[in-house]
Image 1 (cartoon, rainbow, N blue to C red):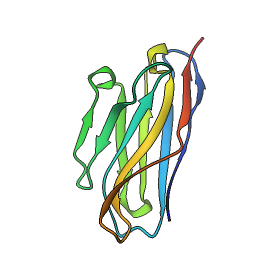
Image 2: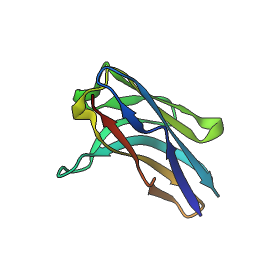
Image 3: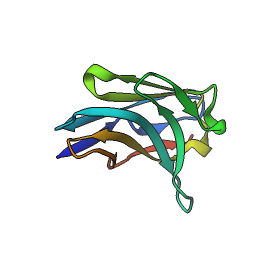
Length: 119
């Protein structure tokens, strides 16, 4: 069984910062890419940021320069540092991991964590 558990969401004022964490646990052989997606009410889920096992990153244009994704391979953990938050960043943020749990690559999702940016 593989689980992805996010933490770090909450309510923050515009211009503030939050740091999300996601830990992958279970019978993991290898983790390939990890990433963060978000889904706002009435909108489709969208990629926020991704990171490969080698550390290459990519970001949605809307968060470039404000968000930073990183990972600790030893801890099977991915982070999302979010700065200069805007009300438009309000969404449920989901962790995503492409990993091998013994049966070949498969994509797993966390349960999501709410981020609300409001004054």
